[in-house]
Image (cartoon, rainbow, N blue to C red; front, side, top):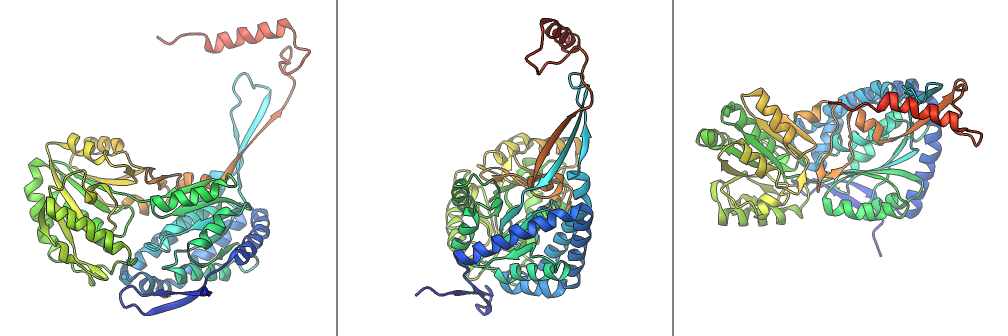
Length: 490
């Protein structure tokens, strides 16, 4: 007999944090039905009332920040300080989405052009209805809130399926929302394993799915969504590169590189995994990196590997990298479940798993390059394209490198800083997925554009959409178009 509940465990200790139901087809059906009704009420409130309620939710989350950070710590194993930072970032995104939804999505007049001189045209973005969010375990508040907050601000109801590793966090997010918005179940959480998420993705009443997870799982979710042509925004894995230019601040670069790679035990989709350093500063950068990594300890500066199955992938990547490359720190013995000590390996072949595949652990490969052009080419050779970093003392060259990086986001002289800017869209290309959360693009991701044209007066002698149209009207049209568009630009 299949168990009707499952436990979430503290990955550092193995202790049970909480027990949650494996919600079945009936439970998901009922949640979506409640959301369908709630969506109508939420849409009817309008932008101003939704703004007020979302700001109340932000306040409730802030008031419960310490408690929620403690729960994130228990279910993921990450330090309380890192959990706190994650929640603070989520709070800033709720604030931005609430305050900007009306401006970004509200009705506005648009130009009609000369051909449409007698028309008035408006554009607005309307809610989809019910949005399903399937969240990850590595940042169980910040990452799903990038979809939840923006979907809610756009006027949708949300059914949230958190990772089976962090269900308690997902349940608490919905409970706190109900404190701020008690009238209707606008945000609900359903708990369970992969089957529960599949049920949500297959429900025809769900008008969009926002998924965060591996590329392989994203393909399965897309297959489920395809049954009803349900659109999906997918934020998948990454293999982010870090480029160090010849005139970079080496100390700052090494410090940022180490944090970007090792924080959250490397379990960050936009974390640093590949490092390319221009020859002129390679030795000095490696000295800085080696000295700094010696002070970073697993279990003190970062937590355990949250998902036990990831340990096998990390071990395989380390084994392969250390056989072909030069070990700077760590090695095969660095994997001591549930922790992994920092691992840095130089000169690993570009076709090795440690360079090509997402490791999702506290490991980095470092390679010396002739110049930034070679570094850029190597960085862009990955099938992934989520984010990246450039450190350079030349602002113009840094900006050009950032623009040419085949990624959705790039940070210059900082690491992962774009995630803390609510107005910037977040998402990738290639195997890292498609669609965007955060910013104006994130709001529009969860809305449908509605275009309306209205005739203000009949155009004299130019009734073009009528069977009564004559040759004279067509000739006038040709003359007008020739005047407007017939001159070549030299």
